[in-house]
Image (cartoon, rainbow, N blue to C red; front, top):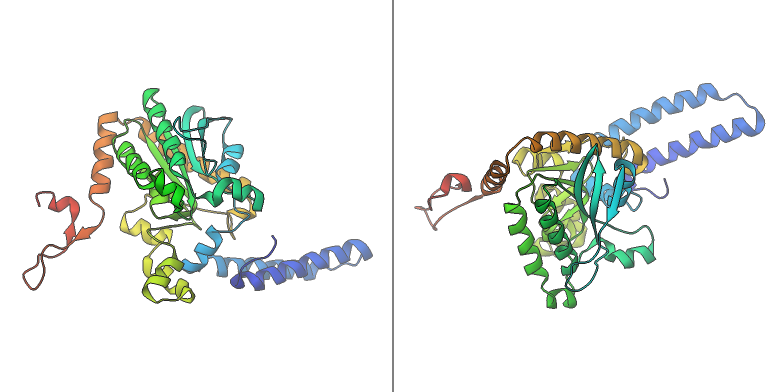
Length: 335
């Protein structure tokens, strides 16, 4: 792996040392197997210690790793077949969102997902995974296709947020996302959402309303980026790490709050270290969810989905000492 983060430096240094010893052994036929074995044991302990105790900000950094697998990588490794469908039938084809039909675990599913690029040229084409309104309208077209043919919907989320440019606003960015929220809430087919990297704001939620929402171990899901939060609260991007902890955007915290339903484990060090292993875990989790949800009648799916999102969060009525205490929304339906 090229580069690396500050917290990974001791690991990368030790990996390089082991690799250098192996090359030395091959060139000079020097037996350094004992030293390599000792260093490898030390490396394994170091990896478990570092990656087993990551802070929320460190997970954000891994979620943004440029070599992390994206939607098309997972489809290439998981799906027996994938046919991409393009365009929103109104304006154009937004390449920041890919969509189509896939054969997954013996069943046909409709797939949508954010897609980033590997280099500057591809990132410009994909708009760095930040979708325009036509991307969300393309997703909306897939929602209706899934419902029409009774196909489960699988959504992969990996975006810093919806594109905020003037053109996107002129073409109805907020409205496109709002239409998607309403459509997914009432969709009469199973919906499984997987956050595979960044889950930023309404750009993520625009394809993120699901019966089951899962996150990879090193991903995040947040109403705002840590840097954006730090700029607002502390007027400094340097407080991003503190903001990440305050926002409670890590998978474990979101699972405890009931925002997500499952955490998918990653290879030690992150999904970018072993695409195949990461894809196996994602496919396993997806197939298990689809098996469960496919047995639930459509009316019950919609009812449960509504109740799930209705129960999230809390609010306080009034102001001053007589204000009623915060309580879950589901318990306050009469207000």
